[in-house]
Image (cartoon, rainbow over all chains, first blue to last red):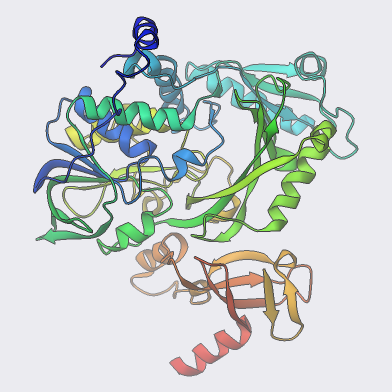
Length: 416
Length: 96
């Protein structure tokens, strides 16, 4: 059932009676060749690419709640590829390219909107750092422009350029960055996967692994035992809990990140603005709400809600950057649980258990990576070799000393 | 969150900075034969439990003491706090 303008037109004439659910709701079969644990963005994307690109049959996705009920529905929808390190930037640029073709690829409106992202600069040292980052982005085939103060002022005139502590001196702009409709991404991948025969099994919580002689044979779930040839786990936020079932301790702490949305306003924010020095970033949704956030709360949490100190910190950052935000009323605040890894970078790798693969540690930056993460994880599951852009995301890199630490803060997850 | 400081009474968690799991008090012996593996565990691997968690907080904007806080990571309920010094000394006495 393909979506097209013609179809919308004919359905309108027939009273919209021809629309069907986007995916089936199947009961689990006794066994699958590939089982993906986690029906969020990364899990659904993995199943989609496994079934479409790598042509693997008998794939299932197990989700403990409903599809897209975790961080894919809780993030602030930003897509970008403005990383510095050579182990990261090609991967995120690959993701950016997949975003650009995504809607045509899976025939679903994910509302990908390339409105640009500006990282603000306040000091000479920051300008040097962003010039270096911009050059690293250009080397990886991404786009980057260094803006001076007047160029930023033309784009975003409403900022407070003369803040006493953090006057705005310029910015690093990536024009191809922007936002996407986060739920739409999950639904698009789910529908695409379902159309090629992937079983999306909801309300099915994984309670343990069946491991024999160091090899995974299947999963214990709330809907019974499900046999599996290979198991891919993509359950950001719950990674520690799920993988404890396979007896693994991981280089991950779970932390809560809060996000905020204001009432709907007329178009005012041209793209995404980040104010790193003030722990604040903001964009505007297509519905008009200002979507913004700041730092993680900073202590281990599985609560999916945060505390007031960070709310205050984010509000202060917003007021310092764009005083007009004080006129907007806050509509909602929510929290999501982040896999904060020990170096701030993700893990896409096999594990010491044969047939068990892990996709985790995305910190608070997993949404932008959804297409590439799914693609790379599917590549690993299907071929047992890492995708070219994801070779560095090894589980044992900490032990070997090959950490990928963008911020250079060391093994302290609440500082990444 | 209010942390019941053993010396100062209830203090706002904002006065503290967070380090992590209280297991970090048990630094491995750097001279031991298995030091490399032990330090990999110590520096990088975490239990990361959903539920009761013992963790290190530093009273940076207070009396600058390290405190071991017992807290539920699912509800944010704080169940108790002890001076890290006392915890470390008790562990040492227990080991001796």
